[in-house]
Image (cartoon, rainbow over the protein chains, first blue to last red):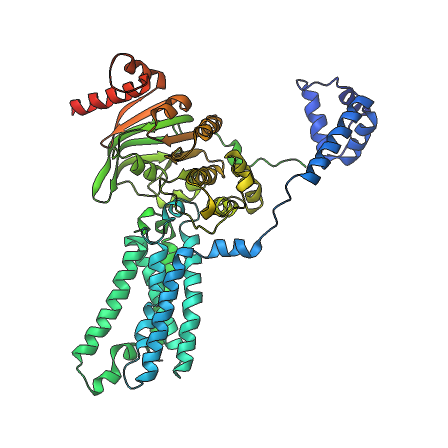
Amino acid sequence: MTAHLPAAALAAYAAGDLGPDNAASWTVEVHLEGCAECRGQLGGLTGPPLRELLGDAREAILQQARTGPRPVPRRRVRRFLQRWTDWSMLAWIAITGSAVVAAFQLDRTFPDRPSLVLLLAPVAPLAGLAVAWSRRANPSWEMLAGTARAGLDLMLRRTLVILATVLPLLILAGLALDRNPALWLLPCLTFTAATLLLGSRIGVPVAAAVLGGGWLTAVAAVSFAGGPGPTLTAAPAEALMRAETMPGWAAAAVILALLTLLRADDLRSPANWR
Amino acid sequence: MVRAVSAHEVAPTRHAWTVEAVNLTVKAGKHLAVNGLDLTLGTGVHGLLGPNGAGKTTLMRALGTVVKPHGGLLRLLGTDATRGRELRDLRSRLGYLPQQFGYYPRFTVRDCVEYMAWLREMPSAAVPAAAQRAIERVQLADRADARLKSLSGGMLRRVGIAQAIVNEPELLLLDEPTVGLDPEQRVRFRELIRELGADSCVLVSTHLVEDVVAACADVVIMNHGTRVFQGLPADLTRFGETHGIGDSPAERGYSHLLMQHRSGR
């Protein structure tokens, strides 16, 4: 758009000699859309009847803008909440929170027993994950499952929200019990990644049930098999979550998370919803 | 300002049919609700009729990529709908109103429609205008900022239609959209889907034969998970001139075709 329109073409357009069926009018209009100078010249060339019409139209539009509905204000906080949270998970986050608080109270009352918080911590986010992909607990599953964002995008959002609510609670419990919270945060991440990876094959709720139930029963079974007495202090949860085992948990978490990202296509499949 | 035309808009269509199902089977629980269905649908409004339990909703769910087909071939908009890799692009061009429209009661109409537009990956800048337009098309502009829990059943159904059309989908699936609509709204709804059917494929599942005859260019009748009939509404009425039971020729034609299918089994 280097040159401006020739005066003859502009005059012909203003007089209405170039009809919509004339191909020359297209070039004139495309140029006019992008060039304020030529638009100004066109304004000078138009006759009084057209100018009156434009003036009336302008009046009417302004009138409507004054009396019509007001523009909808932007609600950033609301939109942020909509996009990051799922209201069906709220109840389950609350239940998980109460379970952690109850376990914390028991640990404080009976400090010589194996820690319940330690037992619960790795699988605490699993209930929220199960609900987020549940057909029964999430009434809008049918609306969500068929959308473009269902898949890696929603998975990361849901997981982050669950971890952001469950992890601070576990950190507080750890600090109050005088233990290093890192000891159970890493297993917590490992179990979350494992649930998502297994979930991309058998459905997230089933994966959460298998892994969560498996962990709790395995630990309980080993504890009982050890019998009462001094062995209790060396319960399996404590044995697995020591400073020495942490590199192993961290490596597992990273590998599982990477595998989950690689399997993002499977997360899009409707089979994840159970 | 010159409007940019994206490559997507001018790309030639590479598929013959918007919906192409060959020997499709879909499970609802353990039951094969869609059993060996062959179906091809192109641009226009299609009505899906059938008795309760014919597999209509299960078929709609499979077309909406909400359940995975058990077997057979399903191509939507030219892409294989059973492959996870291609689902994302396909889903952003789909509009789906489920039979059970789950919603958060504290959302406003606008929240709900904007949220669904965002989930279908519309560009953020286009979402508010598209939501307003969709809400106006279902005549809910005056209730746009009312909470969903304060709306009647028919209005909720219209919110469902608005969320389905907000991204101007190329394939629009409406599962029983006219339930709870008053007669005036039903007439408006027919006008709306006729408009939408001018350049996209609209599939409307319903029990109301008169809706199909009035608004659809093509009728599909299903029974026991298979296709019984596909043709013009006029063909359906022609069957009803001589056979069947019902109050209108179309209803008689529908019942005649179903009876014929049942006795043929």
